[in-house]
Length: 239
Length: 120
Image 1 (spheres, chains in turn brown, red):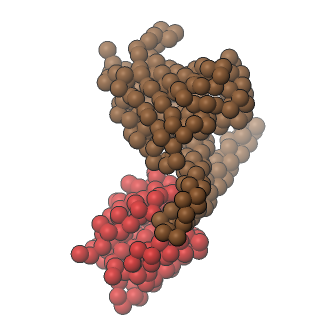
Image 2 (cartoon, one colour; image 1 turned 60 degrees about the horizontal axis):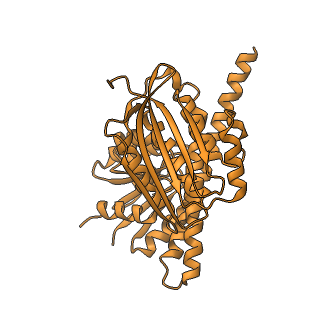
Image 3 (cartoon, each protein chain N blue to C red; image 1 turned 120 degrees about the vertical axis):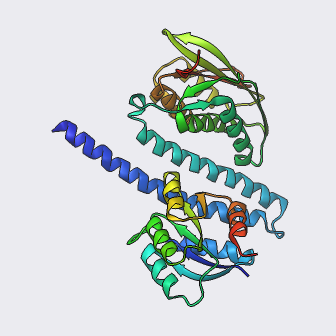
């Protein structure tokens, strides 16, 4: 009886989140488009355009958060499903290209040249969302206009499982003290619920866990940079 | 001038499309607020629009069903399918939509698709 009730309420919540997500995306669409109209108007001054650009970045972020929310509602059974292999090098390069489009007022340099060509993981489209979210949050955490991100991948074996260790190092970040404290606190804990201020990191950590891996992080005390390491199961086809 | 029909249940989204398209020189000739109204207005229109912008999640009849009905009547009709739900893309294309745009999209992406589908 209790199980039935839980399943019923989960399903109700899922439908509600789906409806809510749909309505939020409609509102985001309208706000984003009107901001684009302001940006394309010759009558708008430089300051107005700068503010509109910042607002547009936030709307795009809000859209990604809505997608994250919908994904989190659907990941309960990931571990039981056979997900298609994904070429992470290609996928991360696409995420990096999208990133600059999301933050028109920032200069973002992503160096992915050290990701091994054969970095494949069984994660399907979830990998896409995981890296989109992680990279987007790195930019969010930074106060600087220019951000450098370097990504590499290395083979590893964790608990007898062949894995890829994907390291994302961000520098020149100038993170606020509060964020440094939060990241430091959560980097020493496995409890994802401690991530109260940074939902995108919570999302990435939860996704990594659902995919049978994990997310680790270290942060420079002075807030100049941070490193996120994703440990993800290697594809079975890999030798 | 390319003529357009907009089918979306949100008044503010219909107005938004109208603002964008009129600014870029398109003529919005028909608007409808659900799939059934869209099919009805399309069928009774003496002159058909060059392009239809079709939402998916609408009351009475959804966008995929409305697309199927319209394509049955006119297999050459050009439809840009727009939805916040990317999972519906394959279904929309199977129904006959020529283009798919996930929400929220950039204005230039919509215009690019409209240009691609506009008559020469």
